[in-house]
Amino acid sequence: MDCVFCKIVEGILPSKKVYEDDLIIGIMDIDPYCDGHVLLIPKKHYTDMMELDSDILKHINDVAKDLTKKLMTKLDKKSMTVSYNYGDKQVVKHFHLHLLPNIDDKPTHTVDEMYDSIMNN
Image 1 (cartoon, rainbow, N blue to C red):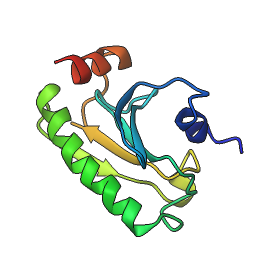
Image 2 (spheres, rainbow, N blue to C red):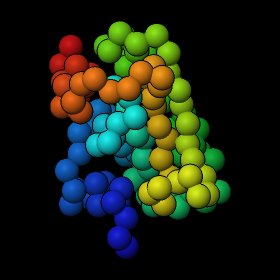
Image 3 (spheres, rainbow, N blue to C red):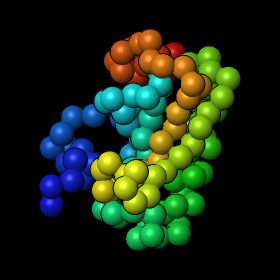
């Protein structure tokens, strides 16, 4: 399979992990829409939300809730947009959830700077 997210999960491609457990990983988006843009990705390949197991979706949403608090605090953000795409809007055909702090603010920091702020403060 030629899935970029599967390669990240397998350690073939590098990533900036901000979260990991047995079921999912949370990584910094390499092309962020806003500062602190994080993706939550199931370790098992599901093409989209229609294939996704309901228990995994609940777990991803629970982690998103916890990470929202962490991101907003560490990055001093005032809002969070949580989204997942389906169909033509889904660029990578592996289900993933976007955490987008202060979505209307364009990025002003590097991914490395945001990662350091999240992980080291």
